Amino acid sequence: MNAVRFPAAAALALSAACLAGACPAPAARAAEAPRFTVRIEGGPAWQSLNDVQIPNDASGTRFSLYDVAGSGPWPAVRAYLTWRTGERHALRVLVAPFSITATGVPGQTIDFAGATYAPGVPVEATYQFNSYRLSYRYRLHEGERWTWWTGFTAKVREAKIELGQGASTSRKTDLGFVPLLHLAGDWRFAPSWRLGLDADALAGGPGRAEDVALTLGRDLGDAWTLTAGYRTVEGGADVDEVYTFAWLH
Picture 1: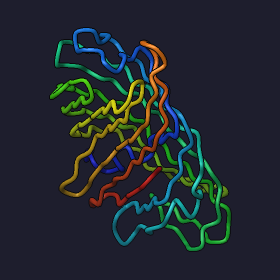
Picture 2: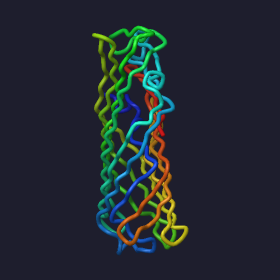
Picture 3: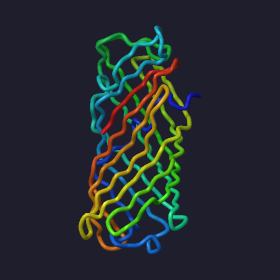
Picture 4: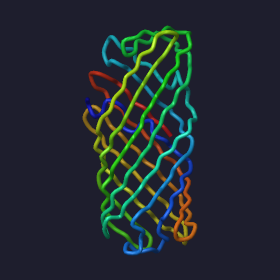
């Protein structure tokens, strides 16, 4: 299957708060950093765009899942495990399941994945996007205040869009691989305080994908950091089989 048929990471959990464990203290050097770091992130997720057409031809209707399911919020969660394999090298695993199911009333006739749905009659919509990633990270710089990482991410996403109305139901599922570029930075601007940037993104061809977070963190001793921030995930694809673009916050 085409690797960009569904929005890469478009329905991942987008959080207002996150919790990191086993984080180094602000002034910790690379040699003193822990080999393993666990980060748990959770919060509400909203959508501001979610347009779908399946199939992407005259037999499919372009419609908005935002109009059917609403803007949210829905609960979202993700977990990271980072293994610092050397002074400058690290591997990071991400597990981010995400699924929403909501009922709305379409304002138009929808032809979707081989079935037809009437306007003015409630439709149950399901949007699922489970994301699993493995990132290689190379530390470009680490000083008293600034740390920068770069690398690449191999992402496997398990996606599903499903509609149901009365006895009619249809769905589109997709399992595929998406390569992404990785960039992360950390600015320790004051004792025990830090600003963080974390991004996986790639654009080109028939699709694009961006997963970017900005966070403000407070170190709670040597082993814990509590952060709050904003994450945005946007992307999609325009290919023969599907049209789908989404933007979540």
